[in-house]
Image 1: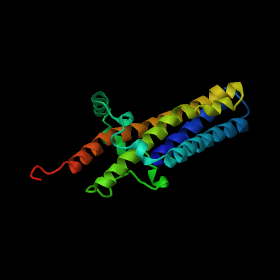
Image 2: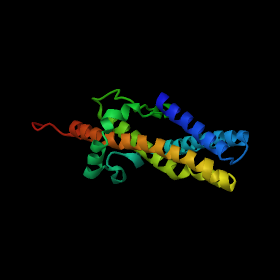
Image 3: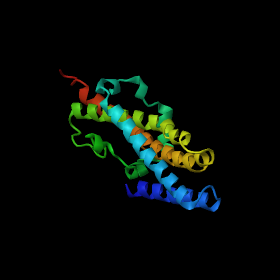
Image 4: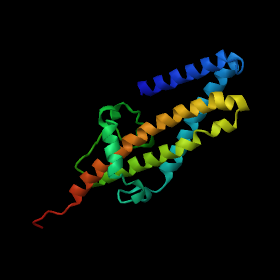
Length: 188
């Protein structure tokens, strides 16, 4: 969480400073616009998460092909060394009632299925936040839309891509666990 807040704070500072130096607007208008754009990002991301969390779990099950991860994607995640940095990504699933930071019950098929559902909900939430994060650009005057809202939306995009990658990296491992658990014993 500290890393995310540091990135957000640093980005807000750089965006504000750049706009002040280039005289986009008065310093206090710049600071207010950067703060409001950042707050709008949090609000929009939160709204998307609330809406997705209200959808039925059956839409996000382990067998839903919309959330399958291809071999090429798995290889990409290996090249990106997701395993080495995934634990540094901010996980806020606990706010919705299901933390995905660690496996609480790795022996329960029902729990693993729920974990997969929550990962898939998270993927959809973050993916919808990609374009929705650019909506504040429509609310600001022309210059500020590109010098303030666009950079803020770009940081939001980056910070939404990271958890998407982590969730997509973890899901095949969870699906393999679930498959092993659901396999019937050979002697039965």
